[in-house]
Image (cartoon, rainbow, N blue to C red; front, side, top):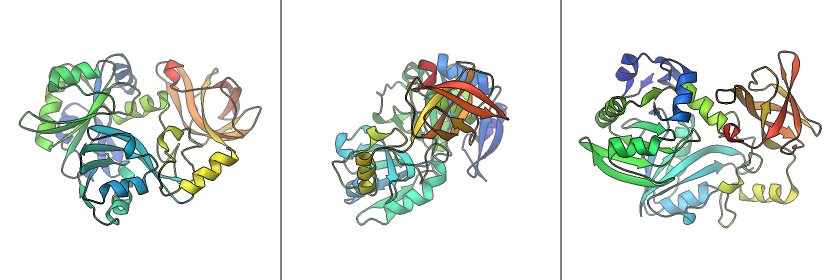
Length: 347
Protein backbone atom coordinates (compact mmCIF):
# COMPACT_ATOMS: atom_id res chain seq x y z
CA UNK A 1 0.00 0.00 0.00
CA UNK A 2 1.22 3.51 -0.82
CA UNK A 3 2.10 5.84 2.02
CA UNK A 4 2.23 9.61 2.20
CA UNK A 5 5.57 11.25 2.96
CA UNK A 6 3.77 12.57 6.08
CA UNK A 7 2.97 9.02 7.23
CA UNK A 8 5.35 9.04 10.21
CA UNK A 9 3.98 12.38 11.38
CA UNK A 10 0.41 11.14 11.00
CA UNK A 11 1.24 8.12 13.18
CA UNK A 12 2.95 10.36 15.74
CA UNK A 13 -0.16 12.56 15.88
CA UNK A 14 -2.34 9.52 16.61
CA UNK A 15 -4.13 9.33 13.28
CA UNK A 16 -6.45 6.42 12.55
CA UNK A 17 -5.27 5.19 9.17
CA UNK A 18 -7.39 3.41 6.57
CA UNK A 19 -7.15 2.49 2.89
CA UNK A 20 -8.08 5.29 0.48
CA UNK A 21 -7.75 3.86 -3.03
CA UNK A 22 -4.54 2.02 -2.23
CA UNK A 23 -3.12 4.73 0.03
CA UNK A 24 -2.85 4.45 3.81
CA UNK A 25 -4.27 7.81 4.86
CA UNK A 26 -5.62 9.43 8.06
CA UNK A 27 -9.41 9.27 8.32
CA UNK A 28 -9.28 11.15 11.64
CA UNK A 29 -6.88 12.15 14.40
CA UNK A 30 -9.03 12.69 17.49
CA UNK A 31 -12.58 13.50 16.38
CA UNK A 32 -14.21 13.95 12.97
CA UNK A 33 -16.71 16.31 14.59
CA UNK A 34 -14.07 18.53 16.19
CA UNK A 35 -11.93 18.54 13.05
CA UNK A 36 -14.97 19.51 10.98
CA UNK A 37 -15.79 22.40 13.33
CA UNK A 38 -12.18 23.58 13.37
CA UNK A 39 -12.28 24.03 9.59
CA UNK A 40 -15.67 25.75 9.68
CA UNK A 41 -14.71 28.10 12.53
CA UNK A 42 -10.97 28.70 12.13
CA UNK A 43 -8.60 26.53 10.09
CA UNK A 44 -7.27 23.02 9.70
CA UNK A 45 -4.88 21.22 7.42
CA UNK A 46 -5.20 17.90 5.60
CA UNK A 47 -2.68 15.46 4.21
CA UNK A 48 -4.19 14.83 0.76
CA UNK A 49 -1.14 13.23 -0.82
CA UNK A 50 -3.29 10.39 -2.18
CA UNK A 51 -4.97 12.73 -4.67
CA UNK A 52 -4.17 12.43 -8.37
CA UNK A 53 -1.83 14.92 -10.07
CA UNK A 54 0.31 14.95 -13.18
CA UNK A 55 2.13 17.54 -15.29
CA UNK A 56 1.06 18.13 -18.88
CA UNK A 57 3.46 19.82 -21.27
CA UNK A 58 4.10 20.17 -24.98
CA UNK A 59 2.79 21.98 -28.05
CA UNK A 60 -0.33 19.79 -28.06
CA UNK A 61 -1.21 20.29 -24.38
CA UNK A 62 -3.70 23.12 -24.85
CA UNK A 63 -5.47 21.26 -27.67
CA UNK A 64 -5.68 18.08 -25.57
CA UNK A 65 -7.21 19.99 -22.66
CA UNK A 66 -9.73 21.64 -24.98
CA UNK A 67 -10.74 18.34 -26.59
CA UNK A 68 -10.89 16.18 -23.46
CA UNK A 69 -12.45 18.64 -20.98
CA UNK A 70 -15.87 20.31 -21.11
CA UNK A 71 -14.77 23.60 -19.57
CA UNK A 72 -12.70 25.98 -21.69
CA UNK A 73 -9.16 27.03 -20.76
CA UNK A 74 -9.65 30.12 -22.93
CA UNK A 75 -11.75 31.45 -20.05
CA UNK A 76 -8.62 31.76 -17.89
CA UNK A 77 -4.89 32.46 -18.26
CA UNK A 78 -1.54 31.32 -16.78
CA UNK A 79 -1.55 31.68 -13.02
CA UNK A 80 -5.15 30.50 -12.71
CA UNK A 81 -6.90 27.21 -11.89
CA UNK A 82 -10.14 25.85 -13.35
CA UNK A 83 -12.68 23.20 -12.39
CA UNK A 84 -13.64 20.93 -15.29
CA UNK A 85 -14.75 17.43 -16.24
CA UNK A 86 -13.73 14.68 -18.63
CA UNK A 87 -16.80 13.16 -20.29
CA UNK A 88 -17.68 10.12 -22.33
CA UNK A 89 -19.34 10.38 -25.73
CA UNK A 90 -22.73 10.03 -24.01
CA UNK A 91 -21.98 12.98 -21.71
CA UNK A 92 -21.35 10.90 -18.59
CA UNK A 93 -18.69 12.13 -16.18
CA UNK A 94 -15.52 10.06 -16.50
CA UNK A 95 -13.90 12.31 -13.89
CA UNK A 96 -14.17 15.79 -12.43
CA UNK A 97 -10.88 17.55 -11.85
CA UNK A 98 -8.94 20.78 -11.42
CA UNK A 99 -6.42 22.16 -13.92
CA UNK A 100 -3.63 24.44 -12.69
CA UNK A 101 -2.33 26.56 -15.59
CA UNK A 102 1.15 27.36 -14.31
CA UNK A 103 2.99 28.88 -17.30
CA UNK A 104 2.31 29.35 -21.00
CA UNK A 105 3.17 25.73 -21.81
CA UNK A 106 2.81 23.85 -18.51
CA UNK A 107 -0.37 22.60 -16.87
CA UNK A 108 -0.94 20.41 -13.81
CA UNK A 109 -4.02 18.20 -13.95
CA UNK A 110 -5.61 17.04 -10.67
CA UNK A 111 -7.96 14.07 -11.22
CA UNK A 112 -9.59 12.04 -8.48
CA UNK A 113 -7.13 9.57 -6.99
CA UNK A 114 -8.90 6.47 -8.31
CA UNK A 115 -9.05 7.93 -11.83
CA UNK A 116 -5.44 9.10 -12.16
CA UNK A 117 -4.27 6.22 -14.44
CA UNK A 118 -7.24 6.51 -16.81
CA UNK A 119 -7.16 10.30 -17.09
CA UNK A 120 -3.39 10.45 -17.48
CA UNK A 121 -3.50 7.77 -20.18
CA UNK A 122 -6.18 9.66 -22.12
CA UNK A 123 -3.98 12.74 -22.27
CA UNK A 124 -0.89 10.72 -23.15
CA UNK A 125 -2.64 9.46 -26.30
CA UNK A 126 -2.69 12.97 -27.79
CA UNK A 127 0.05 14.08 -30.15
CA UNK A 128 2.54 16.68 -28.98
CA UNK A 129 2.11 16.15 -25.24
CA UNK A 130 4.16 14.66 -22.44
CA UNK A 131 2.71 13.61 -19.11
CA UNK A 132 4.69 13.29 -15.89
CA UNK A 133 3.31 11.59 -12.79
CA UNK A 134 3.52 13.82 -9.70
CA UNK A 135 1.60 11.60 -7.31
CA UNK A 136 4.59 9.38 -6.49
CA UNK A 137 7.20 12.14 -6.17
CA UNK A 138 5.39 14.92 -4.32
CA UNK A 139 3.22 15.51 -1.28
CA UNK A 140 0.01 17.55 -1.14
CA UNK A 141 -1.40 19.53 1.79
CA UNK A 142 -4.71 21.42 1.98
CA UNK A 143 -5.10 24.37 4.38
CA UNK A 144 -8.78 25.21 4.79
CA UNK A 145 -11.03 27.43 6.86
CA UNK A 146 -12.10 31.07 7.26
CA UNK A 147 -8.66 31.75 8.74
CA UNK A 148 -6.96 29.67 6.02
CA UNK A 149 -5.72 32.59 3.89
CA UNK A 150 -4.23 34.27 6.97
CA UNK A 151 -2.58 31.01 8.04
CA UNK A 152 -1.01 30.62 4.60
CA UNK A 153 0.27 34.18 4.74
CA UNK A 154 1.61 33.81 8.29
CA UNK A 155 3.34 30.46 7.68
CA UNK A 156 4.33 30.59 4.01
CA UNK A 157 4.54 34.38 3.59
CA UNK A 158 2.28 34.14 0.54
CA UNK A 159 -1.30 35.05 -0.22
CA UNK A 160 -3.15 33.45 -3.10
CA UNK A 161 -6.54 34.41 -4.50
CA UNK A 162 -9.38 32.01 -5.17
CA UNK A 163 -8.53 29.73 -8.11
CA UNK A 164 -5.16 31.42 -8.61
CA UNK A 165 -1.76 29.72 -8.53
CA UNK A 166 1.73 30.62 -7.30
CA UNK A 167 5.19 29.02 -7.43
CA UNK A 168 7.83 30.01 -4.89
CA UNK A 169 10.68 28.73 -2.73
CA UNK A 170 10.07 28.04 0.95
CA UNK A 171 11.85 25.99 3.59
CA UNK A 172 14.57 24.98 1.18
CA UNK A 173 12.25 23.57 -1.48
CA UNK A 174 9.83 24.53 -4.26
CA UNK A 175 6.16 25.04 -3.43
CA UNK A 176 3.24 25.24 -5.85
CA UNK A 177 0.15 26.78 -4.27
CA UNK A 178 -3.41 27.24 -5.54
CA UNK A 179 -6.44 28.90 -3.98
CA UNK A 180 -8.54 25.76 -4.24
CA UNK A 181 -10.09 23.27 -1.83
CA UNK A 182 -12.90 20.81 -1.20
CA UNK A 183 -14.51 22.05 2.01
CA UNK A 184 -16.53 25.11 1.03
CA UNK A 185 -14.08 27.31 2.94
CA UNK A 186 -11.27 29.59 1.73
CA UNK A 187 -7.63 28.58 1.89
CA UNK A 188 -5.43 26.70 -0.52
CA UNK A 189 -3.78 23.47 -1.59
CA UNK A 190 -0.04 23.12 -2.00
CA UNK A 191 2.25 20.61 -3.68
CA UNK A 192 5.90 20.20 -2.80
CA UNK A 193 8.65 17.64 -2.34
CA UNK A 194 8.42 15.20 0.61
CA UNK A 195 11.06 16.92 2.75
CA UNK A 196 9.54 20.37 2.35
CA UNK A 197 6.08 18.94 3.05
CA UNK A 198 7.25 17.72 6.44
CA UNK A 199 8.67 21.18 7.15
CA UNK A 200 5.37 22.79 6.14
CA UNK A 201 3.35 20.43 8.35
CA UNK A 202 5.63 21.10 11.32
CA UNK A 203 5.27 24.85 10.82
CA UNK A 204 1.47 24.55 10.66
CA UNK A 205 1.42 22.59 13.91
CA UNK A 206 3.61 25.20 15.63
CA UNK A 207 1.19 27.83 14.40
CA UNK A 208 -1.64 25.96 16.15
CA UNK A 209 -3.42 24.71 13.03
CA UNK A 210 -5.33 21.51 13.68
CA UNK A 211 -4.51 18.39 11.62
CA UNK A 212 -7.71 16.98 10.09
CA UNK A 213 -8.48 13.61 8.56
CA UNK A 214 -10.30 12.65 5.41
CA UNK A 215 -13.43 11.83 7.41
CA UNK A 216 -13.91 15.52 8.18
CA UNK A 217 -13.01 16.43 4.61
CA UNK A 218 -15.96 14.31 3.43
CA UNK A 219 -18.48 15.79 5.88
CA UNK A 220 -17.24 19.28 5.00
CA UNK A 221 -17.59 18.75 1.24
CA UNK A 222 -21.09 17.26 1.71
CA UNK A 223 -22.20 20.12 3.95
CA UNK A 224 -20.94 22.51 1.27
CA UNK A 225 -22.90 20.60 -1.40
CA UNK A 226 -19.78 19.60 -3.35
CA UNK A 227 -20.28 16.39 -5.39
CA UNK A 228 -18.08 13.34 -4.97
CA UNK A 229 -17.10 11.31 -8.03
CA UNK A 230 -18.27 7.72 -7.62
CA UNK A 231 -21.31 8.77 -5.58
CA UNK A 232 -22.84 11.99 -6.90
CA UNK A 233 -21.02 11.85 -10.23
CA UNK A 234 -20.11 8.96 -12.49
CA UNK A 235 -20.34 7.84 -16.11
CA UNK A 236 -24.13 7.48 -15.85
CA UNK A 237 -24.62 11.13 -14.81
CA UNK A 238 -24.03 14.29 -16.83
CA UNK A 239 -22.81 17.72 -15.66
CA UNK A 240 -26.19 19.24 -16.51
CA UNK A 241 -28.06 16.69 -14.37
CA UNK A 242 -25.60 17.32 -11.55
CA UNK A 243 -26.12 21.09 -11.65
CA UNK A 244 -22.57 21.71 -12.90
CA UNK A 245 -23.47 23.54 -16.08
CA UNK A 246 -21.23 26.43 -15.05
CA UNK A 247 -18.26 24.16 -15.89
CA UNK A 248 -19.51 23.40 -19.41
CA UNK A 249 -18.57 25.76 -22.26
CA UNK A 250 -20.46 24.96 -25.47
CA UNK A 251 -18.31 27.40 -27.46
CA UNK A 252 -15.62 24.78 -28.07
CA UNK A 253 -15.58 21.17 -29.25
CA UNK A 254 -15.13 18.49 -26.60
CA UNK A 255 -15.92 14.83 -26.12
CA UNK A 256 -19.58 14.50 -25.08
CA UNK A 257 -20.70 17.91 -26.39
CA UNK A 258 -23.37 16.53 -28.74
CA UNK A 259 -24.99 14.51 -25.95
CA UNK A 260 -25.06 17.51 -23.61
CA UNK A 261 -26.56 19.75 -26.29
CA UNK A 262 -29.38 17.25 -26.81
CA UNK A 263 -30.02 17.04 -23.08
CA UNK A 264 -29.93 20.83 -22.74
CA UNK A 265 -32.44 21.25 -25.58
CA UNK A 266 -34.75 18.38 -24.57
CA UNK A 267 -34.85 19.20 -20.86
CA UNK A 268 -33.92 17.14 -17.82
CA UNK A 269 -35.70 13.99 -16.77
CA UNK A 270 -33.86 14.02 -13.44
CA UNK A 271 -31.60 16.35 -11.48
CA UNK A 272 -29.31 16.21 -8.46
CA UNK A 273 -31.05 18.01 -5.59
CA UNK A 274 -30.04 18.90 -2.05
CA UNK A 275 -32.18 18.25 1.00
CA UNK A 276 -32.29 18.84 4.74
CA UNK A 277 -34.21 16.51 7.05
CA UNK A 278 -36.57 17.77 9.73
CA UNK A 279 -36.86 14.50 11.63
CA UNK A 280 -34.28 12.28 13.27
CA UNK A 281 -32.17 9.99 11.14
CA UNK A 282 -29.03 9.93 9.03
CA UNK A 283 -29.51 9.60 5.25
CA UNK A 284 -27.07 7.24 3.54
CA UNK A 285 -26.10 6.34 0.01
CA UNK A 286 -28.87 4.52 -1.93
CA UNK A 287 -31.66 5.27 0.59
CA UNK A 288 -34.99 5.79 -1.26
CA UNK A 289 -36.31 9.36 -1.69
CA UNK A 290 -39.79 10.52 -2.63
CA UNK A 291 -41.42 13.87 -3.33
CA UNK A 292 -44.82 14.92 -4.63
CA UNK A 293 -43.27 15.11 -8.10
CA UNK A 294 -41.16 11.96 -8.23
CA UNK A 295 -38.75 9.51 -6.67
CA UNK A 296 -35.03 8.83 -6.47
CA UNK A 297 -32.16 7.69 -4.28
CA UNK A 298 -29.67 9.38 -1.99
CA UNK A 299 -26.21 9.69 -3.50
CA UNK A 300 -24.43 11.30 -0.51
CA UNK A 301 -25.86 11.80 2.95
CA UNK A 302 -24.79 12.29 6.54
CA UNK A 303 -25.40 14.27 9.69
CA UNK A 304 -24.45 17.92 9.29
CA UNK A 305 -22.20 18.88 12.24
CA UNK A 306 -23.19 22.54 11.89
CA UNK A 307 -26.96 22.02 11.46
CA UNK A 308 -27.11 18.94 13.70
CA UNK A 309 -29.55 17.25 11.35
CA UNK A 310 -29.38 15.02 8.31
CA UNK A 311 -28.45 16.50 4.92
CA UNK A 312 -27.81 14.95 1.57
CA UNK A 313 -28.03 14.93 -2.20
CA UNK A 314 -30.15 12.75 -4.45
CA UNK A 315 -31.10 12.30 -8.08
CA UNK A 316 -34.87 12.64 -8.36
CA UNK A 317 -37.05 12.14 -11.45
CA UNK A 318 -38.87 14.29 -12.33
CA UNK A 319 -36.89 16.92 -10.40
CA UNK A 320 -38.61 18.86 -7.60
CA UNK A 321 -38.20 22.57 -6.89
CA UNK A 322 -36.38 24.24 -4.00
CA UNK A 323 -38.80 24.44 -1.09
CA UNK A 324 -40.72 21.29 -2.00
CA UNK A 325 -41.30 18.72 0.72
CA UNK A 326 -39.36 15.47 0.61
CA UNK A 327 -39.06 12.20 2.49
CA UNK A 328 -36.18 9.75 2.88
CA UNK A 329 -36.71 6.14 3.92
CA UNK A 330 -34.38 5.40 6.83
CA UNK A 331 -34.52 1.90 8.31
CA UNK A 332 -38.11 1.28 7.32
CA UNK A 333 -39.61 4.67 8.17
CA UNK A 334 -40.06 7.80 6.07
CA UNK A 335 -38.35 10.89 7.52
CA UNK A 336 -39.61 14.30 6.43
CA UNK A 337 -37.45 17.01 4.98
CA UNK A 338 -37.34 19.69 2.30
CA UNK A 339 -35.47 20.45 -0.90
CA UNK A 340 -32.86 23.18 -0.43
CA UNK A 341 -30.06 24.69 -2.45
CA UNK A 342 -26.59 23.91 -1.01
CA UNK A 343 -24.39 24.84 0.72
CA UNK A 344 -26.53 23.40 3.49
CA UNK A 345 -24.82 25.17 6.39
CA UNK A 346 -25.42 28.54 4.73
CA UNK A 347 -28.90 27.92 3.32
